[in-house]
Image (cartoon, rainbow, N blue to C red; front, side):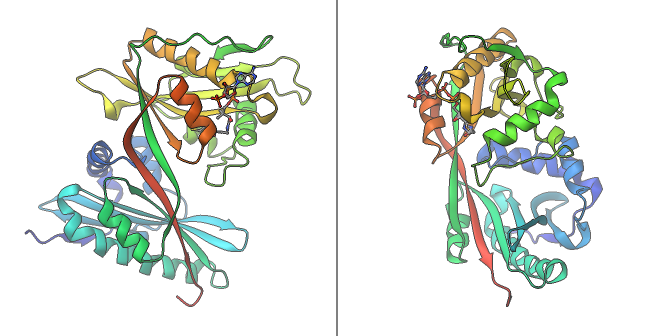
Length: 326
Ligand SMILES: CC(C)(COP(=O)(O)OP(=O)(O)OC[C@H]1O[C@@H](n2cnc3c(N)ncnc32)[C@H](O)[C@@H]1OP(=O)(O)O)[C@@H](O)C(=O)NCCC(=O)NCCS
């Protein structure tokens, strides 16, 4: 067994981290950033002190583990801290527990520094293929808030033609509707406690500003006469899923789908998915993936009806209160 060398991460680690994250996503996906730009932005995140909030382990010069505590802001009476624990399969025995202990210790320091009068809520993700870490987290007091599962669909299977509701136009993503799409997104996801609710600044990095964003395979549903003046009533964002190319056959990720509440159960999401899948197939993609919450029964039924199948791959989102006396 080699001895791992531990040190804080540095901005120059971006390539090595992309390699580590890519390998981990291949074997046990939890939705890590994979693009170099995303990783650069992650390491430069405001408020992240690389020297104190990150830890990497090297094995003969290769990064095999990455840990990070991130202040995700103050919710109602609680400081939210995200813990990232990414370990190459080969180093799990040596690195997972050490990183876990360091993350809890660092999170407790972070709470004292940032919000000494508030309790903290710790949040983390764990792949379904890592039962040992899942057990470690459960024993440490974490509980699963939600499972997210990966569904897949072969694009060569016929795509069902679902018409959009009468009077609704489906168009490829159009930058002119960007601001209105953000409003529609936040309305669609308002009731989802674990969803990201972006503001104007973070919106581009959610989907539409990512280098992998595929505007022509993404869909906006427009209703010209919406009473609130926002014509965007539904959206579907598609990303190039470079990490899951199979035999050189490119895949896509249906990354984010929503219908504003007053337009639901009229076939809009089915029509947007049908439209996007046809565009993906026409562009030469062979396979579509998506992630869905196990408790989102409406969405799971919808995807299953449209030919998506469970892969058995997925991840849990877990939280744990960190009391003020820690
Ligand atoms: C999940 C979501 C996108 C579905 O959008 P939608 O536009 O209501 O979807 P559809 O209308 O195509 O299908 C929903 C149901 O309505 C039914 N339906 C379709 N047309 C209908 C009609 N004219 N009359 C009655 N029901 C109808 C569909 O058969 C489907 O039923 P099912 O439960 O048997 O699958 C929407 O609920 C949403 O935005 N949720 C919040 C965000 C979210 O969870 N996104 C998915 C993340 S993975």
